[in-house]
Image 1 (spheres, rainbow, N blue to C red):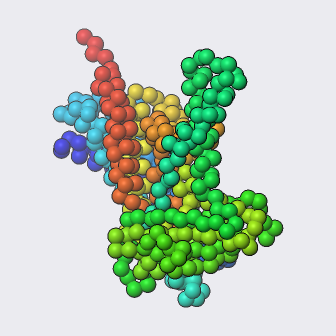
Image 2 (image 1 turned 180 degrees about the vertical axis):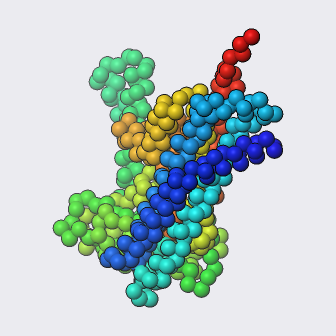
Image 3 (image 1 turned 90 degrees about the vertical axis):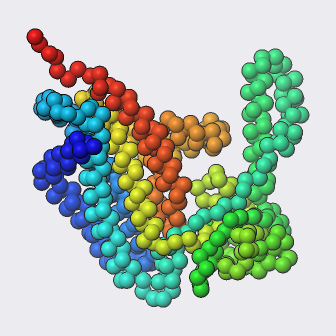
Length: 461
């Protein structure tokens, strides 16, 4: 272990000696984060919008700058030792090649931890100053506290199971198409059967989430355990699509909520008039949730909206679907969790960089990892493109993308933090286990094997 620590300490000192690089990185992080706060302070807008913008851009900028730094340092530290022949001195010491790589990884983690803490402290202090200066009145302060400076857990209703009904209703259509096309190839028949069932399931899903004029829809949210504070509220967040689109671009709605399924008759009510295709939230008191954490929410499409049908995004498949949000913590805890998630991403990139530096040259390894990094950032978009264009189920696409691509976008905590959503233990654990333990471990293992059997020098007798 002392040899690993010595290699790690040597890496940190080696990077620290490049004072111009360290000064540039610290000045860049500090200047950009503080400068953005000053620029937003003199700009226009509501206080919560300014702070959301600041958290989004400052943390994303910090994460990407440190990611690029990690990529180039992790590759350069090994390729540089080999190019300068300093590796000859190291391998003659009582340190194995595995210990050498472990020391490099530990040193890289220490460097990232220092820089991330420096940038995180700057952002946290700047955010604290903005929270004191930006809200212009008590209403804006309350909105900021309820929507941004809090950690809210999201609960979505379960997806309706329509597979059995879709399979039953699609059999007639399938048999008719087989007869009309005179199909005998088993693979073609199987393809027709899967396509028809998929389309029928989508039709049933659309029907179940569409509310006609005068109709109703009810959702069940389970496991809600809000903080028992004096002014604790549950927030219902939703977006509505319509068909056809009304001239006013707005629709009315009557919401009922309570702890039992018969909320349409016994629950408390709330009337809304909302713009279509826009995200909205409204609060409901904590007392309407049962002791078991059950909440039922019903929506009634008034007849006055005729002929407009209101369509709610499908929970679990859309980025914005109806969900219940409740407070589970504070901003400081959530901010630390966000920094932890960013740190785990940097560790993953460091593992890949060290593995590639074991057997590739610096330019080739840098290009290779940059491609991986960009694909990881765009992994959510790629998954959605595959799902919509190829008609694949989200669970299948997620499994494929999670295995073959680094889902950096899926584990990004910044969108959660800026909206006051809780960075969950599941996100951190999945990031640690899947990205670092499984993917990073496999890649690093192959890199270690290449490095172990690599001929660094030839013995000449």
